[in-house]
Structure formats: C-alpha cells, structure tokens
Length: 197
Image (tube, rainbow, N blue to C red):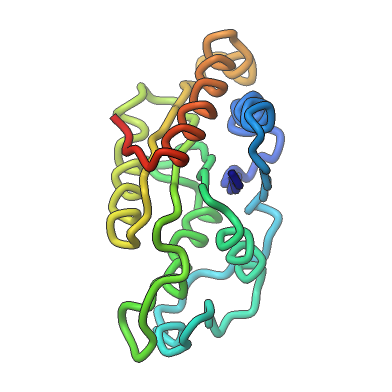
C-alpha cells in the first residue's frame, strides 16, 4: 500500500510532526510505502475559482503552475492520503487549506471535462490541538468527511492528540501507541475497503 502524508503544520519539527513519527514507523513496519510531504515549504497559491481546470480532460489542468502540481503527482501515486495538521481556529492551517481548495482539478464536475482523477482513494486525518478533542477537531473532520463524500473518496478515520505539555504530550506511550494503532487500522481499512466506526 502507498500512503501519502501531507504535513500541514508550519512548524516542521513541531507537535504534529512528533505524533506522525510512530505512525510512519508502524506503516513501514507493516510494509507500506510512505511519502512525507511538508506543505509549509512549498509554493502553493490560493485557488482562483476560475474553473479553467474543469475544461481540461484527463489531467489536473490548473492554470497556476506552482508546487501544487508535484503534490497532485503524489496524490495520484497514493492509495491513501493522510492529512496531518494542527488545529488553528477550528480548521487546518492556511497552507494545507490551500491544498484542499485546489482539489478542484482532480474532480471534473463543473465544465466540459468529465470524470475524476482520484475517486476511490482513501483519506485519513492526524490532528493535534489545544482545546478538548471533539470541540477542537470536529469542524475540520466534518470538512474532510464532506470533501470525501463529494469526491467519492473513502474516509478511513482520524486520531487526535491534545497539547498539554508541548512535545512531551506527543511522546507519551499512550500517544505513540495511538499513532501506531491508527497506522494498523488504516492498513486494514484501505485493504478491506472498510469505513470507519
């Protein structure tokens, strides 16, 4: 299985990256091929809402030739895309939000082009946050679930961990085991086509 982790934190060695470490380690131990892409150091412009991509058949087709094209290549490579992000104002940081907004060219729903470039892929979430779990993460998770439904993607679930003591919060045996277990769950759900509980 091929797993793409889109690291959405502007802090490349921060809390979210710490929680992702055991997740990657377990994926690789289970035989997955992993690509880890940091979004913060990429040049990704905001979507212009021009719909030009909707008239380009069989390819991404965005008129903005920035680093989103390399991320699209990674998305097309992957069986499962994991969005890893801290929660800022009840959603992911703006750099990852730009990636999500630029998904349009992967779905050909609004112009002369038809079809989808990524239908059937799986999507999961790893979130870190300051507020209590559901209160902090529910808006972002809801947005991702709706994106999956709209794009015919399979949502395979989320784990989240609260920041109560900076990096130490993400180095506890409980946090590490949660990340490792999520890797195993994703492997099973993607393989079997299961939906999350």
